[in-house]
Image (cartoon, rainbow, N blue to C red; front, side, top):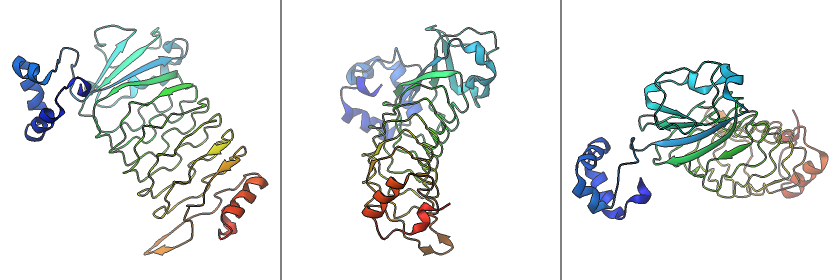
Length: 305
């Protein structure tokens, strides 16, 4: 919707004084205002919508018990389309005999959490976010967790500006070789625990734009990322991180990375004490030597279980 608005200034002023639903209704019936803004609502059934395209493995019916559609809460706010059909399905569940090659999901603006949306969906091989016209998604924890057959993920249009929780976001996506996070905004994220846990095929991961100033939990963040050779985390700020246990455990291929900016010294803040045990437990000796050269002040407990 936003890219069709010619005058952002006019839109912002209207949006400031008019509630989004009143605004949508006003636009729907006011053709003159639509023309003034250079806006057409013909292709937008839902304001602030999210659109996702899903490609299942072979045919969806083979994995009927793991279809995420059958587990959705508030199903009236999720609109499902099969195989380029123009009309959404009028039932809440999919039986195991369905033969679906492609699914389109439209998520209404009332949904502010994508927690566990595709959790344990072993039937999916491709996910692409086609549109995300809003920023108020606060919780994305577990959204792709255990999508163990996922081989292609396009989240370039997924807005994370207001997200605070990314716990286990990509955990156990064992076939993903690359995740493009160049458009990710993490300014408000507080939890990155297990974010890439057991992504054993992951070869590329560019985190150069990550802002970690508010993050409190990074335990198991890169645990068992055994194919990752390079990790650019020199920009990570860890002053507020309270838990880094097993953060890089089992990163057996990691050769190039920078932790010179890390603060992992133990501290006491009321009852809170930073936990750093086993950060590099199970890592090869050469990686431990790299860490010791960069930060000789680090405690030996980061290498121990």
